[in-house]
Amino acid sequence: MKILTIPMTEHRNIHSIANQHYNREIKFPKGCKYAVVLASYYGGKGYTCHKTERAAVAVSKRLMRWGGSHEIIDTDGNKYLVDPYGNLIREDA
Image (tube, rainbow, N blue to C red):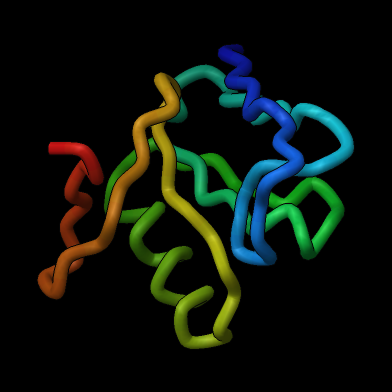
């Protein structure tokens, strides 16, 4: 299991996945490469882990229809966007 820590930050907005009171830990079970992380505003566990891009994109699309703020990240902390064709594009690429 890989654990990714999202450091807390005081300067955040309602859509941020970082929490203002504590570090968030994302636990990736064996084989999982991506996590769909809800904004910390929603509270609770706030993320799901996925082995494939396709699974992460499906959850992201559902959340977009619902209006939920979220980000897709990988085990190294890279952030991804979903293109119009349903592919993940690394945000800093």
